[in-house]
Image (cartoon, rainbow, N blue to C red; front, side, top):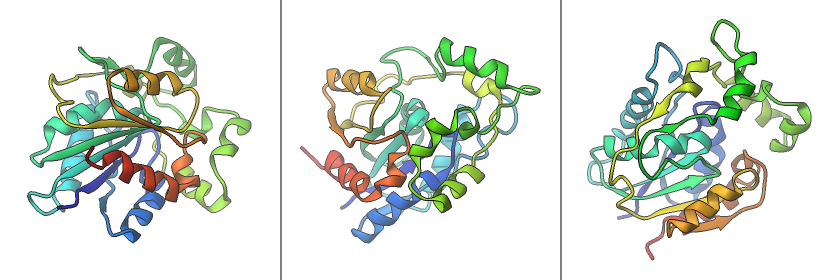
Length: 231
């Protein structure tokens, strides 16, 4: 039985960052679901239970017994262990795409100290601007190859509370008891990909910026299929 791909976007952006890849996977005969995490930042911390609940709710649409391939982009990678252990479905594999990795043991901070130092002055009444508003135009423009896609991605971004980035995410023991792999787009995730390689995971490189899945959805979809294929 072919697995269903569960494409989990970073809570800093929205599901539009995965929809082009979902379309390519569907066209290739693969089953796909794309949970929306845009409401994760509502309410008070902890935020990680809402991530798990959102994915679990979407996965309920998948026929019982169908294996899943969990795919996490950016800081969604930190929640993948909790998602993995929070589902009542078999998980055939997990793929981290230009993503942060959970600690091998113990809770993982969502943001390192240097990022928190950058974010704190941006917060107004405890809430941050949209992710694309953090950076200069020279940093953001190369991530998009057409104005319509950029507009869609920008408009659906949430304004997350600073406390989202201040949280520490639990890491359940034994969550990685299944094949895991890593798809690197580029800096600054080179070192993260190397750590994945040191863990014995399969690692692939599709050169591009951090949102390269919307620039090259066909190539991204192809790599996801290859990385999740049985050895």
